[in-house]
Image (cartoon, rainbow, N blue to C red):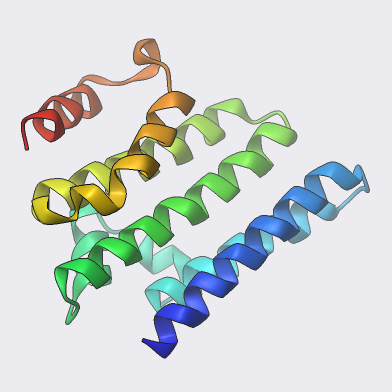
Length: 155
């Protein structure tokens, strides 16, 4: 529980740092914020981001869920999605819209997959899923993500 509290506090601070970096307009602040995102991913996965991100989404979720209750596993996936959204904010700010969209789609996919795996966690993830769905237009959704949304809606 202490670890989860630490991760939640770190993600909250990450969000504040990213918003401040983006708002500051200072050169180099975006790079610092992106390094903070990478650090948060390292802390969440407990392995270098290059290793974690080389895995499939299912493997990433397996890693996050290992030894966790469904509630805790879903929270870790939610934390991952939040880190991805912070990365997307930075990418938007530096004009890398395709990377921002990819980060948001990965976050949405992770959240949807968590609900499909642990349907009882839908109530805990629904508002975040709704927020991510608002950030990605239907026209931007690739067929696999559309299928995941359809499956989510039947759970």
